[in-house]
Length: 204
Ligand code: FES
Image (cartoon, rainbow, N blue to C red):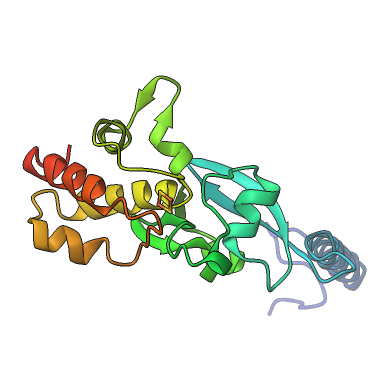
């Protein structure tokens, strides 16, 4: 009968000391991992309660610092210096802060920055890359679809988002689809003509 006090032939010997050494290493490794996680969490939360997060805007990731109440519009304008979306709710220009979130026209002033995490955000700046302008922009110019211009960036983004989803829209559909944007100067005629022209070209 085999003597169980002796190690089995062919197997490495393993005694209490080895076990304790192994356990100690595992405990140390776990503690180091916990410390690393805590340090990371502390880095993400500043003393003021602000949080760091990454927002994807116009195809690029940006690390920003926000408070729970910070809106997407505030981040775009005051941290990323993307000032195309306007902050004009108090002067009745609804929709001047329109951006696209995952392709949908959205008022940036009504969305918390935290809610935009993980989404694709596009601002009016993405519709003009150097000399290359989106057809909506050139069409607005062609039809003189602006006066003071405060509402224009929002209308351009809303039109792009609408035509992407409804490339062959009718006049009625265009009027309904852009109904969330207001122009106090009354440039609706030019905006509508532009949208209709592009819809007749399949959204361009
Ligand atoms: S608000 Fe002035 S052009 Fe629309």
